[in-house]
Length: 235
Figure 1 (cartoon, rainbow, N blue to C red):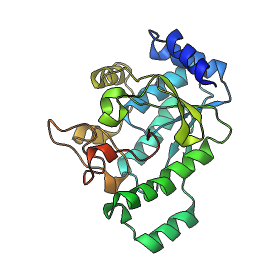
Figure 2: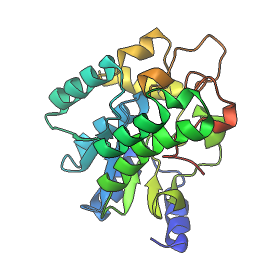
Figure 3: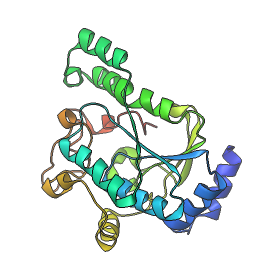
């Protein structure tokens, strides 16, 4: 997809609903589009929509090997609810073993560089394998999730991930709208959300937040705000 096409699509779907956007791209790019879900609230909304619109669409998640038990439980609940089995993609075991041998099991606490190395091996490399041959990947990004996501658009080329096109149908949704949709449709969600976790990633790198804190404050809380991306959505 060229930059001109991306601009044309952004204009075309400027006032379209998330369902309209998804419906078009899931049909138009069938077989070349996939949804990468982290099982967060936004991604559960998208799983619900995609299952209704094009249930054969590839849906996958990245299992870093260090997820919360509640996240694994939600994978089973989601598969059962929508009567499918999402693909679960794992990191290369040799890469993980070599990293741990050299850097230690909890290397991510030592420096931003080490944390990004861990994210790269456990998340980014598996993402590249999972999206081989895919032109568009659907994400649950919203602008008000983080200061690092304010410039995201509905459709954009992701040069950090081999020039794939990212489709962000919920880019303009508020957190309240996400939860209203979940409740209205009785969508299964991660129970950690009820315990103060607005954003949920790997267990050692995620904590609950205090009232008034930024929604991304619980991710890599020992780092500065501008570093709070794993690399999947780094601009």
